[in-house]
Structures are given as structure tokens and as C-alpha cells.
Length: 113
Length: 109
Image (cartoon, rainbow over all chains, first blue to last red):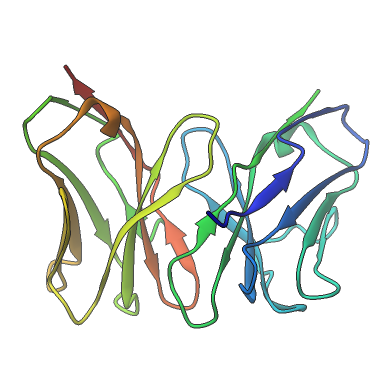
């Protein structure tokens, strides 16, 4: 069964360090999303790609977060420098163009100490 | 300003009975609604969806009802099973998916 792959599953980093997450969407899915989920809250969209282009990054803290999807397939989300408040689950999802249902990966649990 | 609200943080039901999870929204531009199920330490799993032009969609034990005039939708699970115990997220889409905070469902054997 096709699935969204994310790595690493867990990451512990010290504040002020850089951290990166990787996502490989379901093959053929042109739309890729990065979400952040804080415990007790629902997922919040950070950035949405259509192929290699960013279509929505209005909630991405651009002073420290960056995301890229250079070849329109896999994607990387980076945080530099990490802050204590960045501790959360980072979820990647993908969908086919024009399809509302997004399929999520297992997420990366980030802990900043 | 929360556009999608799940006002019940938790719900407990007996196995075999009906589970009803509720969701309210404020944005009248939402045209598609989805329910996701999430187990601990895993990503959300798509469960069922409904377009704004419909008022009901059924898939096996799961039925979603949409009341556009009340800006309310609900997910019915019948009969409930212990394996249904999870956090359920309501989501709504206009240009992007907006999620509620989730309701933790516990189905007791």
C-alpha cells in the first residue's frame, strides 16, 4: 500500500541548533503539505506545495523555518535555530491535484531541549 | 479565531453502542469536510468525507452528516468497537484544510 514516508521518526535537539525533516509523498501526488501538531491541538498547516512551487506558506515562521521541494517530489523542512516552543509533531501529507483527501505520514516528533 | 471547533475533548461509549462526534464551523466558504482518525505516535488516517452539496455520506460503520444551515457536522460510528478508540479530527476545506482540536474517543469493552 502506498504511503507517505517521513524521517526521522523522533528527533531531540538542543535549542539554537539546526534540524531538518524529510518527506517522500505518495508517488504521483503533486500536492505536498507540512503540518505542525502541538499536543492537544489539531494539525496546523505550515506550507503547501503544488509540484515544486509554494502555494501557501502564510503560517510558516520564515525567520527560522524553510521548506523546499526542488524536483517536485520529496521535500525537506528545516528549522534554524530551533527554539523550545518548536517541540511538536511535524506531519507531512500529500494528495492528488484537485483532491481534498490528504494522506499523512507517521510524523516526526521533535523535542527541543 | 478557531474556524473549526470540536467542543468535546473526550467521549466514552460502550462497545456495540453508537458513537457521535460533533464538529461546528464558522467559515461559510468551506465546501468539503473530512474526518481523520489518529492513534498515538502515528499520523492522522483519512476516514470519511462529505461535499457541501450533500447532507449524508455513509461508509460501512461510519456515517457523516452535514447540516449547512447550522454549520454543523457529525460522525456516527455504529456499532462502536474497542479498536475505534483514537482521537478523531474534523477538518474543513476552502483553499486549505483547517483542523479542529480533536475528540478523544474511548470505546469500552
